Image (cartoon, rainbow, N blue to C red; front, side):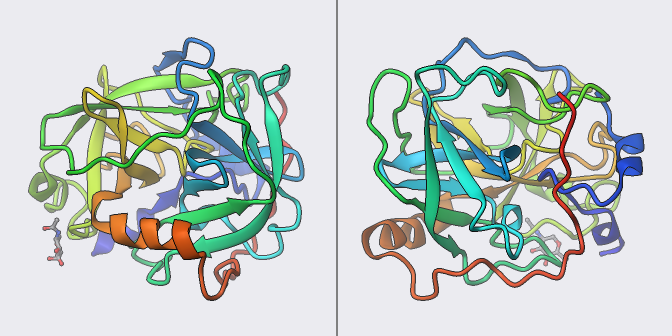
Length: 277
Ligand SMILES: *[C@@H]1O[C@H](CO)[C@@H](O)[C@H](O)[C@H]1NC(C)=O
């Protein structure tokens, strides 16, 4: 359990500018996605600054990570759909305030278990070629399966990626990922460990909440949750929350909303800081 001290949620919450020191270059080693080739990709922003990725599941709902929501930020939270370039939004984008935030009731920011959040939009997405929901995977990816991840996360000193980047990843054997050389017992059965392809590539800060997309018919199998302080450390591989085990909770919440549509209590003293990009 000693590894838990190293948990580094990958949302863009930077306590101090010096936090940049350990950040490696974005999605590191990925490449720019073909514009709008992932029409379900969403940018969750606070005060106009990208904080996390998310996936459009429905015209009024997106799925992201629970740790992406910090207290007091719901009012200035926005969901941007149809986005490719962060700076130059273009006609394809639609921006929505957040009507309700439904974190998974079992979210634990110590263990990072159940790190899922459903956000209900204030408004309805007009669907089209550049804005389209994605479905949930029916089963979890097997060890060795190839999946992909996309995001606007950090690319190193230059700050956030100006355009959507994507990365191929390989799912790791969960027992190996949980052993003492890797996450040392920190991997719950609801988590998926994976490695960037090629080696040395990895998601970075700001890529949290983005969907892990698997299968021939692209579907969400996970939500990017955390990695180690050095995001390219091969012994602290990135970890996603598997969505497969939460399908019922997701479907129920999309149908009926949640009982306490509040942001989860957090005591993080972090500030959202403007990133130069
Ligand atoms: C990882 O190890 C911990 C502690 O032994 C255990 O509780 C957990 O279920 C293990 N995870 C997996 C995926 O086997």
